[in-house]
Every structure is written in structure tokens, then in C-alpha cells.
Amino acid sequence: MTKNLKSLDKVDRQILRVLQDDGRISNVDLAEKVHLSPSPCLSRVKRLEEAGYIKGYRAELDPSLLGYGAVAFIQVSLQRTTEDVFSDFKREVAQAPIVSECFMVAGGYDYLIKVRFEDSEDYRAVLDRVVRFPGVAQTHTYMVIEEVKSDDRVPVSL
Picture (cartoon, one colour):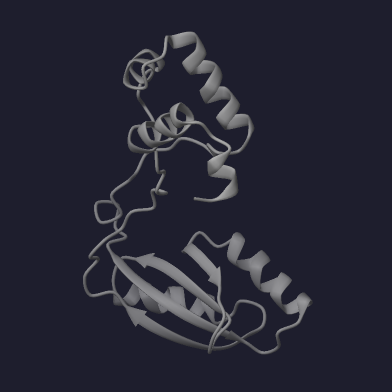
């Protein structure tokens, strides 16, 4: 268990688990699930939000129904590994709606990008955009055949 999680008591962790599974739960129902009255429950939620444990609330959309059912991971190697190249690349990625996730990694390449798209024609347009990001020297793509698990919930132990 990390240091920050250790500083939370059992009720705080229960609140985080419940909200992570159902961000639309009412405060009254949440309070009932964690065995508190509504007022202290709401105070705890606000404290967890202010402390940054809860970053926000949003709906989970079905990408396939919205025309983004295909997924690929693109390995990106940069021309140089200098701060200015990293900075320019990250700035471009942050502004690119075609990129759903991007990670700087250690190993044989510099970044791993996750993109969603409609079909192979759409993918070509995505790749054309990615190779034009500042500093990109080389890319390798891995097309996802089957999404076995997709869960961005954080494990919160009690």
C-alpha cells in the first residue's frame, strides 16, 4: 500500500471504491453504503476531491458505438532525447484528440501511444498525423485484434 493510501482511513477508501464504480451515486446512498450519515459523508467526499484523490466525474462512453471501435498502439522513437524535443512532442500529443493515451517509456523506444479510430482508412490518417509530431524519427504499430480487458479503475484496498 502506498504512503498516500495509508494516510486514508477505511471509510475514505470505501468512499473511493464506491465512487469509482458509480460516480453518479447520490450522497445519501453513498453514506448508507459506507455507514455514515450524509453530512459527514459529503464532507469526506469534498476533502478527497480537494486533496486530489478524486480528479473528476465522467460518463464512460462506448467507443464502438461512436465510430472508434478499432485500437492500435504506436511505439514512437524520437530523433533526439533532449528536453526541447520531449517538450515539443508532449505539447503536440496533449493537443491531439486522436491520442487517447500516451506514456513515456524506458526501453527500445521513447513513447507508447494508444489511438482509437474507425477503420484502416481512418488509421492511415491517424498515422500520417502522428509521424508529423515534432521530433518523431520512427514508429511501429501494433493493431489490437481483441480487447481482452479495459479497466482504468485504481485498486483501492480496504
